[in-house]
Length: 530
Image (cartoon, rainbow, N blue to C red; front, top):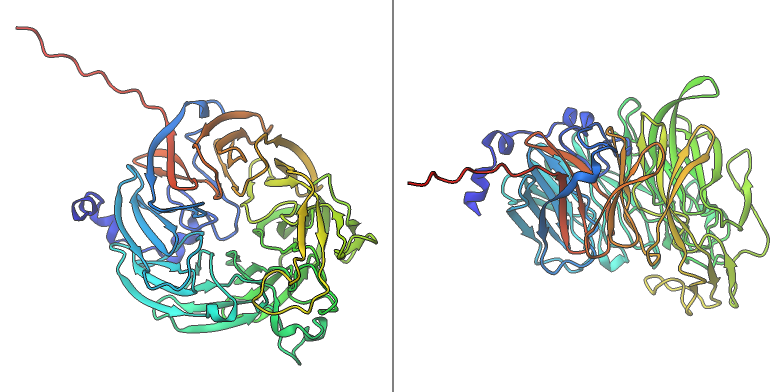
């Protein structure tokens, strides 16, 4: 292992990942889970194009022992790729796929999937399933410090990738389906000291607490997906999960702030600037855990700073990211029957008879939502947002039993029953009109949790529901390449460069794949006969 480490250049190992580097990502590197702070997931690399993408071939495959449904989004810095598994981080040679180092927390009290790491300075930041924020030496994987920021005894856990900004690391928690209280917290990247904490469910007596009824202490609103960040306004954008109990709302009368919302927080203090609630008093588990994508576009003739959000409730939202003002909402999916639309203030116009009942109600979209945490991407050249969507309906049932924290969905067997397998589509939307420009139908078994990456070469790469990494033309959606990895895909692809060659990488269920353009092997002349 030491010999492999020596193969990586000394400059790469000693270089510091500065905040200024993160601001410039992505380039040859892919420094954050979403590629950049804005969540656009667009690579400026253009060696791979819609014309030559059919020449892509696997360059290497790195298997991770005992992996099962990897969700890690690789990050790459100067030839080293960092990936995660169950309570484990690995440093990999991005050119060859060879293991450089690995670290696993054998003391973790919980197992679970993990979505990736954050880089800052000479450190890799990682969160274990039992909520220990961990700082590792980027060169060796040695532990520098650990900080427990929540306890699994309180019904919380972690699957998220931390989010490093300036001199701090942001974290959140999962567990909103079992009765808990969500939060976003900031920690010093140098010492692990807690700097601030924003609770997504107010305490009794605080503003918004009257929107919860008697379940305010266990309201949910988990925060298990990383956020995005606007450096100009120093604002952090973070989405929140569903209220609890998921499908039974009588014990939590009101809108249930700040569940199913986008909150804008001051990075320095954690104080809320504004919030927008997509689904007030949600009873269908339509949390807002999908990436808020930050773009600057002319809106009705005037330059405007926008945030785009494709929501599980079936609508595609455009908001002013400075004020939180609602601007527009259009349909993500065709099968949407719980609301007739969104009113001028951004509230859904709900249709009667669509709340869960003990006997069950058929509602579209289903519990997995019109989309989910699969990463969207934005192409500044086409000015299109690419989103994986699901056309599906479910039968939602409620429970009459008193809910108990940490006991599952809502007690009494309440929850969704699928009506059909559904069908996934990759769709391209114009945010100025909200209209669907093109769609790519998937033909697999209806299971997909993989997102997208856009590239300057005019190709959008995504994982389909049949175990294929697929490339389509960014303007038309026409298929230009696909490769069957042989197992399911539950993570999103990235684009990076190593040794001057553009690569596309993605985690499958058990391995990391890296693809590049085919390079013919040069013939070696045979020795002359004597």
